Length: 269
Image (cartoon, rainbow, N blue to C red):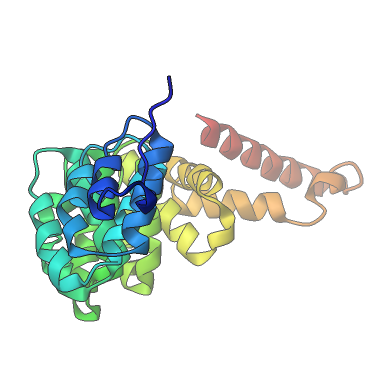
C-alpha cells in the first residue's frame, strides 16, 4: 500500500509540522513535495530538518530540492549550520553541504573550503569541493587554488578527471604555469590529464575524451615528434604524390610516409 503523507494545510495539522514529517516519508515523490513546500514558504523552523535530511537523502532530485529550500532561507541563519556539516563523518553530508554553499554563493564561505575538503578521500566530496571553490575563490587567491587542484591531476576515474579539468578550465589563463609544469611530469597519467585540460581550455568544443586521446598521443611521442607527425599527416598531396613523383623524389616521400606511419603506430601503443 502506498504511503500517504499529506502536506495540504486543509487537514488541520500545523503546516510546518506536516512538511517536516513528510521530509522523511518513504516515498521519494512525497519527500520532493515536502522540500518544495519548505522552499516555497521558507521558515527558519525548517532549517534543522532540511540540513539533517541532506545527509541521508538517497534521491538526487530530492537532495537538489533540499538544497534549493535552504537557499531560500536567510544566509545569516543557514551558513553557520551548513558549516558544521563540512566536518561530518558522513561523506554525503559533506558533499551536500558543499553543494548548498555553491548555490548560496556567499563569498564569506570561501575560508571554509579547506585543503582537506579539496583532497577529500571521497571522490564525490572532492569533486563538489572543486566546484564550490571555483565559485567562491577571491581573485587574488586563484593562483593558490590552481596549484592545489593541479596537484591532483591524474586522480581517479574518467568522471573525477573530467570534474577536475572543468574546474581548472573555469579558472582561466591563471592555470597556464601549473598545467605546463604538470604536462612535463614523468607520470603519464598526470602529463596526459594536464595536456587534455589545456586542450579543453584552448578549445572547449574539443570534448574531454577527444582531448584525452590527443594528449595520450603527445605524451607517447613527445611534443616534438607529435608535432612533426601531425605536420606530416596534414601536408597536402603527400598521399597522392608518391605514384607521380620523379624517381629521385619517391624515396624521400616514402620515407616521410613511413615515418608518419611509425609515429601513428607508436601513438596507439
